[in-house]
Image (cartoon, rainbow, N blue to C red; front, side):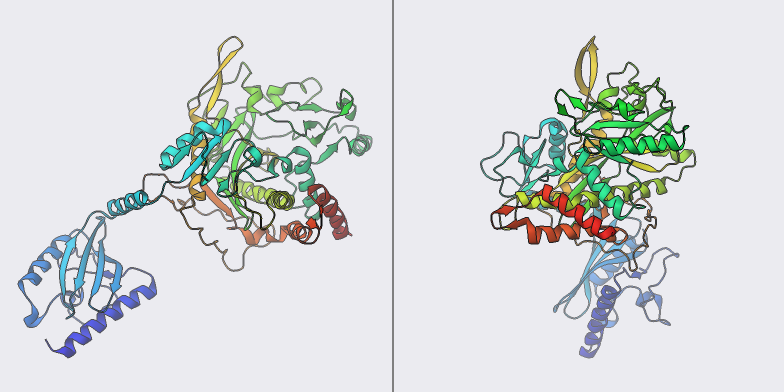
Length: 601
């Protein structure tokens, strides 16, 4: 073989690999003995014999040898299983390595050229998935296991233990003298005051920010700026400071139309699990005092026409992960819970206002009803999975993609409303330059679907229950906790995949960019066909992520709403710390209210 021929052949092979890499797609080749349906790669020159162009490793002339014939026979045997696709190319000075995947078999071929340009080896290897899994196990063994301090986990401990075990991470149930990678707190950021590194599953200020009064203030600020975008939150009044305003407005409505008799729901500011909630039809029914102290809370318009299933009112508990504030990253769990009332629904009247099992969906209330149904099935009982309810609605012709789109928009807009003040809290606890951990947090959004399928935000819980057991009465008045398959199915997945996303061993992914042009204001979020989120699982033993990123994925549709956040950045920069005077959240509320009025004027 002449030197000139060898040089030309090597140059052709290098060009072939470079072109394929530029195009970013696999190139198809037909192997002698393959099925007739296999086609010749368009990269090959036309007008040549198929047998001489389909496989570059075929040898010609005097250079043909026994190893070559053996390799050719071996190639034909493998190729009979399907066409071959090039999946990896490596060029170097001495030779040209290529790996081929056999379509339909999961097998791959590997071959390598000698310095003279001739391929000398072809062999089959293990199934691709097996190879990836083995490589994953090797990497996992090399990595130091992620350490998690669970000493402050409280009621989420059982679900957290299962998640850590599935991830093969290392738990420290009594804490650790040296720093852990992740600290899991059951209540607040301040459960452990001595953390200067790692990650904590609570943001400072989140509990305060999501109290009924502060949440109402934050959303109402956005309603004044963007009334159409924030119409998913019921009209609210803050008690006791807006009691007179509430009384005056209701009396005006009734004087204008005597047939109108709206119902209102009263919620204590720091209440949880349905404690202290009641319905009224007249301002005079408000219970404003506790002894000599005025009760802090909100009063809201009651949604009188909710969507019913089996003639029962229900709400949705949706789990939302705030992965970071800077940059803002929001994930929504693809699976959630639906909590059902235990008394058939009737529109509120003076006679049934006190029927809490009819009007309030709180699990902690309804579990004590004689009609509460514990079920191991995800689609029956008084607590069901969200997917089972959506499936049932879809069977009735409901556009579920539109419902999900509206829910995603509600979540993003709500987070945008609370982030500005949350940044002020964060800066007060962890100012720039002070050593401290980074934060993330799982929130519980309680959402009601109206009869017309419009989602309404009821409240946001900073500490949603992650308990995977439920109360069961084993004797009159005696309750104990027993496993709840529905809770475990949903909550373990949320905690486990939150940990996977926060794994310090993984590099932060590049923030995805929205396609050019973005969306118009108010346009529906396009809900793509359900695809599996990329699993950050090296061993291949875990399911795909149950958490779906919604921000910044849909950022271009919502960025114009982040006006108050920009004002908060100015507040922190110029007023937040000045000499010995530190202005905190209260001062920010005053600052933002003045700014909002100025904007409206």
